[in-house]
Length: 197
Image 1: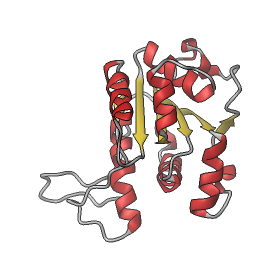
Image 2: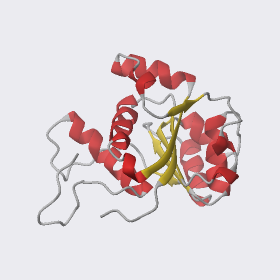
Image 3: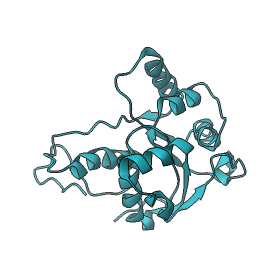
């Protein structure tokens, strides 16, 4: 049985391609409500446009967590005193990565990331770009040195995925593991691997 304290988590969605990862992440979080004390959500303006283009709907408006405007610096997690323990940015654009790496807190997403890093809490960036230039790589290095985790949206294949949904799950399950959630997922080396969910 899951024994860890409930999590206070921030989920940000930026304008990189890969809205399907964010959509599935929200679906998984809805199934993990007993493990969550509070969940806060932020969308960049481009994230909504990309979601509408790639998924073809505005289902992000029906996410059952509080959504904060990206310019709302009165949000509780804009300060370390609110004690949020985890932030996931999924997908994370290279522009967002760059602003975080350089300490440019020009909206609530980058301010929250800055707070998470300065409080030595867990920041997970699900980056989505290919190929990478040296600026991207150096920004990833800076964020890693500051304590963040770069988790590229690269599906794995050793779980023998049978669908696009399975491929997406290989990324989102890894993110959920990194965030410390108790989930069911394929585990390498397990003779009776758990199914991907």
